[in-house]
Amino acid sequence: MQIVEGAGITVAVVTGACTGADFESALGADLRIAGADATFSSADVGDPVACARRLTQLLGEARAKEIVLGGRTVSAADALRLGLVTRVVPAAQLGEAARALAQGLRALPPLALRAVRDAVRATRELTPRDALALEHEHFRRLIATQDHKAAVAAFFARREPAFTGE
Image 1 (cartoon, rainbow, N blue to C red):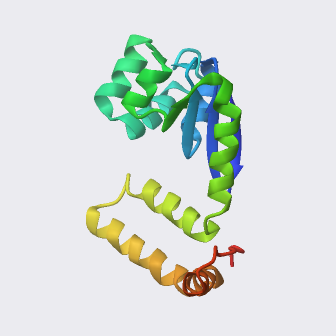
Image 2: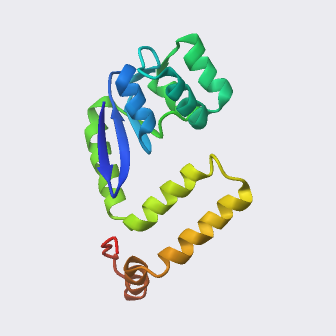
């Protein structure tokens, strides 16, 4: 398992067995992609409470319990079905898929990506009203950035924008 980064967004790239510290690291990533040969297990994690909490946030209580209490090893296909990973690719294509994903993320406006990531994470703890207020706060801040101006100019010029993170 390795973590790659694209514009401040972390992607766990999983091949083979993902257990213990690797499983905890994968759960902490923003996105997770897996080779078709990957398996996931909560066995031997360093902090079982934190692992159970993160799994519950990602999968819901019933599915988290099924994995943690049952000591279940989850295949890549089941991980995709459960929502533990966002994509499964043939193991031989995993490196290229990870590079393409990171490259695609780097092509997007980094300030907006981080705002979306932070807003999604915050919704775990917020009421719908507070989540909407946070979304509006991000929008007001982002519309004043150089990246937004670059996106508008590129749209009217019919070209790809170049984002600077400013």
